[in-house]
Every structure is written in structure tokens, then in C-alpha cells.
Image 1: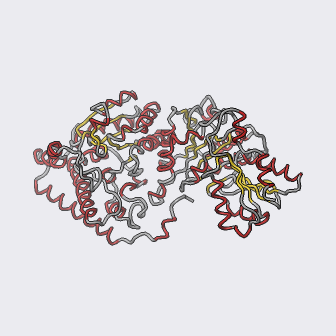
Image 2: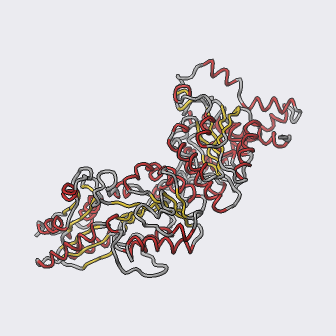
Length: 320
Length: 320
């Protein structure tokens, strides 16, 4: 598959946006400006970027507790996201959801989710709706290695397979379910092997190579759109930060961490762009600087926004 | 027509009216449902709209959440209310919370149909009335019709509601006959019905306990006690005005539910009346319920377990 200069640069912009958003969230959280929990996507940017580059606003995604990257890659607005992290009235959820529950249903983002594995049946249902309405849309379920041990995984992949639903399960294997190594929490090394149990395709790709992710997702999504049913894509990647901000990460082997930092997806893409002469270092620096100012503008929007009114606690429980 | 036929008629009317309404669950297809409640719908609407699922309660409810968020109006069946525990996260943390968490920007028009109740010797895992687990959860509605006309009217209302509705049908009521209006007939959610007028005591009941409360009122009338019987029909949102108005007239309140005592919905009603209607009461509030045990198997034990007309009569008499 030919990847144009424009597409590669788009990938780069998205990945840098996610990285800088997360670095800013990290900084703000450490400064005590964000309530609650924050789970950062740093190091995994190639997965959301490569997958969502194949989607339109009509397609659906379900995300996870580590959802900022998925939302940005699917077109989520930075200012509304940042305002939600601050718990402001202008945030995506009017301050009622926070980092773990950001959604934009109009963009097909059916929400980050605080329950590990909860997105799998929801994505299955969204795909059911796509097939029912024959609208050629698909659903993508992002989930982690830990979530692939949930019962939701089994029930959803089985149901999606028998109904031939247009859904792609993207497993971000970042090697740890919170503090527990994949080597401990499952007895297979490639999660994609589990696809065989449902009679669907399963592939493992280098999740830090955005082009590899893009190509694998393109094939699975095309298959889904054609009506040939679901697929499982395992993207092997690495969570550079802790499970949550404040996690001491004592369970990580420092050598392994150092090794994975060498495989950071963003410098890898920069190298490719420079080698192909699709960009100069100055071009990349310019993208970085422009992105940083967009993030700063989002922070300013959030900080300048009002808090929700206390009486708003009672609204939005039920429709109608 | 029977209660089951009336429920089915409500479903059929809505499926004809709105192509986005579909039914999914275990054995709802050619088999027609475990108690035959949906017999004929598969033949009428076909496999695209009456969908047999695997035995996967989590995926049944979870897929409904995703399908509803993506614009369909699923009606899903959980074969016995006892099985609701299998899909609790999908109800508790997904369906009930999405609208609020997303700041009011999601709409989840979905119905979970489920049969409750003892009396069939089905023992502890196929006989429970678990409504109190669900009335405790903000963000969902709970309806429990006791008569054929309400079975239809509440099904139509539940399907047209833009919120998740748990529609509980009592197994012993499925064959009960009654007059049912034809065509589009709606019983608004949130409205109780005064089933029998009375002046000495208010008996509040719902679902399978309504006929027993009515029979008890008949017996009490012969003994000179005039009982008013309220069929709640909807538990959440509760029509507390109907209860308070009646207690204002009678000064006495007996609450009857088939579920066990502790943490039952009767406690909530008692608390509301004690709080908002204390001055109306001439006697302590009584609750007639099952004991705090699992539902037993043997006929003699189950009879001892279930609230009966006799138990209601004797509870009422204690107030005089």
C-alpha cells in the first residue's frame, strides 16, 4: 500500500498532538490542577493514529480509561477535552464525566470507559446498528491486553463473528494489565491467536509503527465494510508512563523500559519522514511548535471556562 | 387476551411502527421465548428483527447499549430476572450512566424485558424479584405491569422512551386474561393505578402481588375493612403522590412485595411516607414480603416463602 507524503505528515501531526496533549495533562495533574485519575497514552500514539486514519465521522469507536489518544485521533476537539479534564462546564461532558468518560457521539466516539473490557459489547452493538441500517459504517473497539481476559471479550467476539458484524477489535498490548505482566496474566504470547477461537482473522503488528498499524487496520476495516465480519488486530506497544499518573512503576524492568523508549513511535516516524525527504527537521519543528500552541490555547480555554453550577448535579440523569 | 399476548402486541405495534425497533435475546426466534411470550414475532418480522443470540447475557445487554447509542431501539430479553447479575455492569455502569457521564449528549432508548417471580418450583436461581437492585440505580426506569392492558401500554411506552427501561413481566401473570385496547395504546411510565377504592387502609403492591392484594381486599371487605389497592405499575420513577394521596384518605399503609424484606423497595416507600406523610398515619407502616432467604424449591417451602392473600389479610388486621 502506498502511503503518500500528505498521509505520513497527517499521521505525524496527530501523533504529536496526542503526545503534547498528554505531556500537558501530566504537567497539569502533577501541579494539582486536574481532579481524579489520569491515564496517559504516551508511547502508544501510533495505534490510535494508524487505526483512526481509516475511519470517517460516520464510523464508531469505543475507547478505554486510557482514551485521550483515541479521541484526538477520531477528531475530538482539544479545547472541549481539556475543559473536561479540568471539570469545567464547557467540557465535553459539562464536567460530569472527566478524563475517563469523554465522548462525542456526533463524531462516533461512544466514550472512554472506566470499566476495563466494557467497550467490547458496546462496539459490537454499534456495529450491529451499522449492519442493521446498511449504512456502510464500521465500529472499532480499542482495548488492552488486560481487557482481553474479560468475559466481555469472549462474548463480544463470538457474537460479532456469528452475526458477521462490521467491527474491528484493536488490542493495544502494552505488556501490562496495570502492574501485571502479560507473561503472567495469559498463557499465550500473541493475543491475536485468540481470534482462531471465533473463526475470525487475527494479526499481530508492531504497534509502534504507524504505517504497519494503518495497513493492518485498513485491511480489517475494508473486510468489515464489505460484510465479511470482524477481525482482531493486536498492536504490540509500550506504555511509557505508569498505569495512572502517580504509579511508581516498580513492576517495570528498567532495561525493558529503556529498550522500548528506543522504539518510541514518534522519532521512528520522524526518521522515516526525513529519510524519504517528505519533511525537513525545520518542518517537523514547526509542526511541534504549532501543536504546542494549540494545546496551550486549549488549556487557556479550559482555565478561563466556568465551573458547572452546583445545581447541575441533578440534570442529565434521564432524557425527556 | 393474556398478559403475555398483550405484551407481545405492544411489541408488535411498535415494531410495525418503527423499523429501528428490534428484539434480541436467547431463544426469542422460532422457539418464541422460554414461556412463549414472543411466539410468532420471528415468523412475522424475520431474522433481521427478531434475533436469536448466543447464551451471552453480557453481550446481549452490552450490544443493546451500543446499538441504542448508534440510533436503534433494541428490546432485549434476559430469560430470567435472576440472570440480570450476569450482565450487571452493562446495566449499572454503561446503560444507566452513559447519558449523565456524557453530559446529557447520549440517548439510550433500550428495553430489557425479563420475567420475575416464584410459584413455579423453580428454586433460588429462577424465581427472584430483584427490582430493588435496579430501582437503586439512577438513570434507568423500572416498570412491572400486573394486568394485560398495562403489559401492553407499558411495553409501548418503554419502547418509545429515550432511556433504558427494565420491563419486568411476572411469570405467573403471563397467562392471565384481560381486556386490552387495540392498536397504539400507551400507559405512561411513572403512573400508579388505584385498582380498588377503599377508606380504611392502603395496600400498595406491584407485579405478581397485585392479584393477591386485590383478593385480600375482597376478603377484608367481607369483614368490614375497606382496603384501597394501589398497583404501582412503575417503580422508577415512583408515583409517590398517588400513594400519599391514598394514605391521606385511609391513614394506614401496608406494602406488599414478593421480594425479600431487607433492602426491598417497600422500605423506600415506607421511608417516603414516614418522611412526607407522617401526619397522615394512624398506625405503623406494615410490610408483607418474603423472608430474607433464597427462594426454596419444595412446594411446601415455597408456599411458606411467598407472600399470600392470608398473610396480607392478617397484616392488615394487625393495624386495627
